[in-house]
Amino acid sequence: MWKILGPYFELLFPVVCSCCGSSIQQPDKHLCGWCSKERFEYSGVDPDLLLPDSVKLQFSLWKFDKGGYLQQMLHNLKYNYLQTVGVDLGSILAEKFLSEHHSLLNELFRHAEPVIVPVPLHKSKLRKRGFNQAGALATGFAKKTGWEVIPKGTVLRVKRTKTQTGLSAEKRTGNLKNAFLVKHKIHFEGKIPVIIDDVFTTGATTFELAGVLHPKSNPAVIVTIAKA
Image (cartoon, rainbow, N blue to C red; front, side):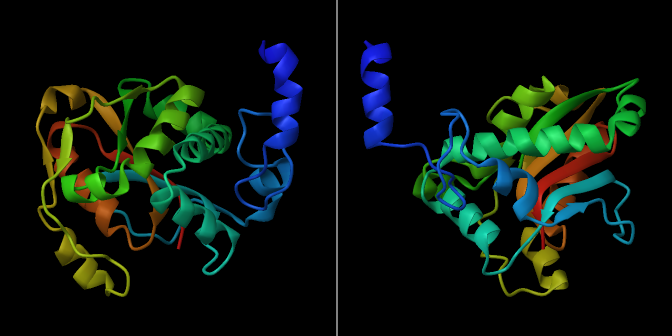
């Protein structure tokens, strides 16, 4: 049936890029080739970023473009329930991360397996949004890497924090203090947490989470779509 109706369906509801709106030939993709590879400025690893002992590496795919296409797309991902876009972004993120740090990752994971940790939302925010955008990114990241994602409920966000927007670095850190709780620490024994989130700003959120995971694990790796 789909072989007959599929072409007509695509004419009525064409697959378009979630970033720029141009037509896409692959129905399982949500970003066109230009937006996924050429539109945004590459970020990578910031050599001047001071990392805490609980973090081994921080990598971001693109530089945040305040008021631009990337900010709008990430806003839509968060607030317009675009889970499939998040999965596609997670896959793109993983592909670039693996290609850029192949040798380092082979060395890093020689004696400890990676485990993917999407930054959790507080239950009140999860109810409001309907899904966790970091979880969608983690799903796509896992599909590309083959790495395990921690089971839901392993790490909880137990503190309902106010928005980080507009806060200084010091206030962001204080806002996130004691925000996370690890309920099942056995999942991290002998493994390296790979923390996934959408945007890295000062590191307050992911550093706090890494610090909670660190006592029973190796230093974490932080991977995000954008760095502001």
